Structure formats: C-alpha cells, structure tokens
Length: 159
Image (cartoon, rainbow, N blue to C red; front, top):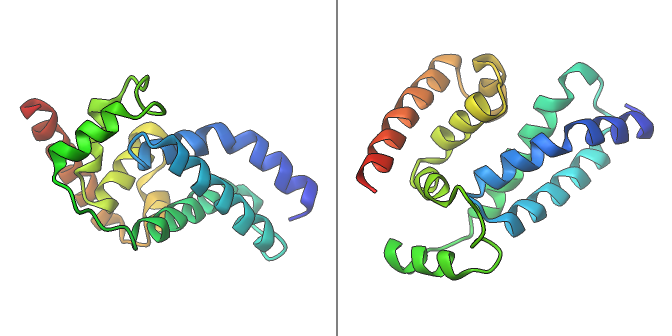
C-alpha cells in the first residue's frame, strides 16, 4: 500500500473508526482520540506490508481494537461503580455526551461482547469480519452478540 493510498483510506474511514473507538471507550473521547492516533501510527508503519486494500477497514479496526486492549490492560479500578459514575458525570469532556446511559451499560459488558455488538450494530460488519477482528470463531461471535444483547437489555432495564 502506498502512502497516498493509506491517506485516502484513512480519510474515508476515520469518522466511522473514531465513532467505534468512542463507543468502545464508553464515551471517553480523550482515550478514544489517543487510541486512534496510536492505531494510525501503527498502521502507517505497517502499511508497506499490507497488500489487501479491500480489507483496509477490518485491518484498521483490528489495530484499533488491539490498541484499545493494550491501553486497558494495565488499568486498575479501585473505586466502586457509583463513585466512578459520579466522576464520569462531573467530567467536562463527557458531560454533554447524549448517550452516557448506553455507554455506561456497554462498559459493563465483557470486552469481546462489547466489541462484537459495536461492530455489528454500529458499524455494520458481518459476523465473519468481526471474527477476524476479535480473533474468534464465527460461532463465538454469534454467542457474544446474543449474550451482549441480553446483557444490555437487562442493564438498561434496571437503570
């Protein structure tokens, strides 16, 4: 992939990619911005070896998902949910965010369930493509989607 092709594909996909990352980060737009920048850098450094241009979207989403996981691994949560919810509600960056209840519910889902739900419903990816991104079988992705829908329904109903 040439530099020009890379720039063209980034420009065409960056809105959907950033929307996915904001949702994956449960509304934390600053973390999503950091993950996006790091993902684009990683992709740019590897674009010489990337040959299947038709699969650019899945490739960049996979890099973004992996980068997100790497950011979340060292994170330790020391406060209970109610305290954290209050802190998030007071945050100037997230206060105007209209979908905070949904993001709070998404945050409670296990990582692969959340990612599968977001890619399938928000970005329109097929189950096979999601399986490639999260490195799971198609049957596993179907399970993640089923469980994710059920868990989201229960969480939103109880809040």
